[in-house]
Length: 483
Image 1 (cartoon, helix red, strand yellow):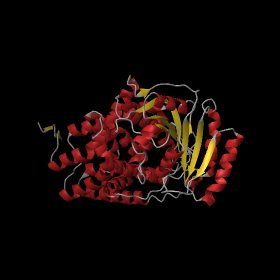
Image 2 (cartoon, rainbow, N blue to C red):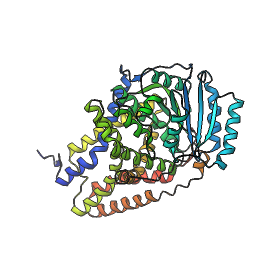
Image 3 (cartoon, one colour):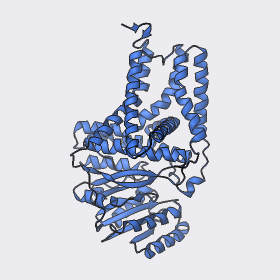
Image 4 (tube, rainbow, N blue to C red):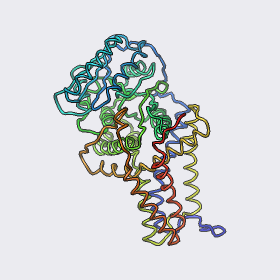
């Protein structure tokens, strides 16, 4: 039966079927996959790729910690040096912390003096190197250090990251147990307590629970992280180090390690504090770079993935991992295409049948429940958990036009001049004009009005899913709150 008591059970047109499959289903399926990975990861695993060790003492002999810096506030560098004093039980043996700076010498020299003086006062083995040779860029700086100065194990840290006790020791132990690289759990922190920072920081736990703990528990290939990853130097040299000019160097080096059959370990119960953006413009710059970088890596690295010795299903899963921004991009595309199609066809496209609508709602509910459960695990109250989920969803939808644009650019363009995400004092100078979001908001509001006038009520009301988050983002993202 096509209807029950006058209610349409299934689709009423081919256009609805196409929209459902191409635009609506992929983001919901991604949410379902995240939910499955979350619950799988919570059950744990016996896979040796997923380690659970927690030794807060150790000896970092043969370890070089590399901190690439360019246009970074001096306060963050000094803050990292001060933080290292908390790790004295680990910072023993033949280790070295190397700051490699790509700033002009006249700018870098006074910073070098301040950093090395503080390190000497605190009795830490720190070297500040001003790089004047070779191509500029993060990958070139890392290659220079690894080729010329690094010890057996190389740990990459961003200047804003703060390893917690046990993090460095356990990553190094993980590499020494036979992995080419090892990563740990990221945990967000912020300098300015905005609604945006709180939502991004709290939501980071769910991303780690799914994309790292969940995937590691199933034995999938774990891609290195840009900060907080320990590498075996020999493995890096064997794959040819980082390719210079690549935007998302962590994902790209992952495809090279997979190509050679190396394993990357994940340690679940040690954490690295990572500074999250407090301003919307900073988050937008970050997401533009990441969405471009993921597609650039997919375009350049899929042949390596499929020529690797990994099983076929793991190759497919790794490819899908690199496509993680595509469902996000489809959110914006659905907001652009569906209302225009409804007007063109004079059909209420979003008046879906009971069965497909219920199917979408059930999958969204499973995703929401897994997200809620993850946030509750860190001790958030029910009300704060729900508010965080709402804020996170709003920012995700608001960012979707940028993600769509840079996903397409990543597929079509071979080079992209990006800006590093501003941090600390640099971030405070940003002005969030939100031009793209305002244009998108004007579009969906106009489309909602036109569709309602023509009687496409379901499509018009569905556009509220974009309008409410965009308004929330424009009015609340940078509002400072106290926890």
